[in-house]
Length: 306
Image 1 (cartoon, rainbow, N blue to C red):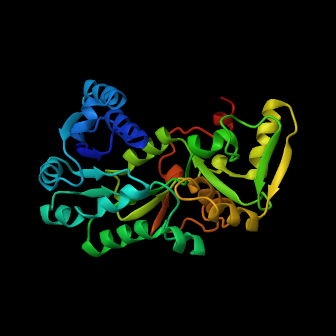
Image 2: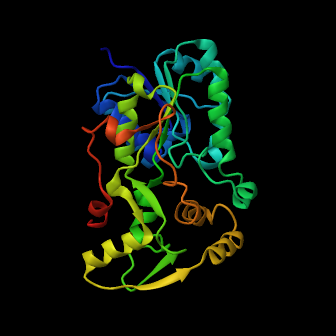
Image 3: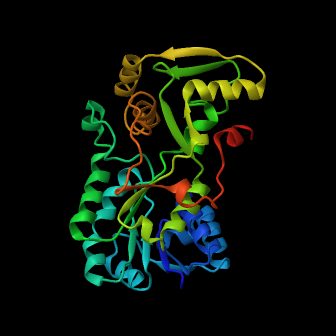
């Protein structure tokens, strides 16, 4: 079967770059929509040169530029927009255009985190409007009949795992913070692995209009398990500093957004249990590691070993 042509918007970002690399590795004709300013940015320009050398076609434009966006979409079968945070609202505007063009076989929107439809609604979500934009985008796709696949990978390893969620510049050697009772579990995935699973979905009818959950058992860990794993690796017991749910809430409210976003993530996963309280069930959800056993991924233990 002929490989789908893929357009990735945001290839100079960390996940976007990994997605483009995976698309090229899996032999998909790969296109990137790139802002003009990126070509003069030293680090971004280096990434773009590498992708171009690897066979990617670079197109100038952005999600806000309707004409270049339309022209780019006409060239491909699949569009991936790996945005997050405040950028996400901008990704709603072109969805009707995709439907009018009638050329997109699959859209993979800017979720790539915990499933917002599964998150426990709390005063924090009302306060920071954290999940609502993602839910709105999902509902818009469904209402417009735009074919989609959503990727739910929960935490990227590089964000919280290096410090064991302790907001340090390096792994703890003496003391470690444990939130709540330390037994609620979260899920961690390496970005390059998320990219490989994502690209695996684009021509797979089993993932059409579904959520692909990445929840390998080796990467589902509580804080207590993470600390014990790390203690074994360094051969030393750490002093545990316990922070209650109430104390964590006060700390979140006492810190302005986005400086408190890591604490919001921690509260969602390790207090509310938003990553793991539910089972992955058809017809709306599929298990990525079961669908694609050939895709190798980094385990939490392997990540901590480095």
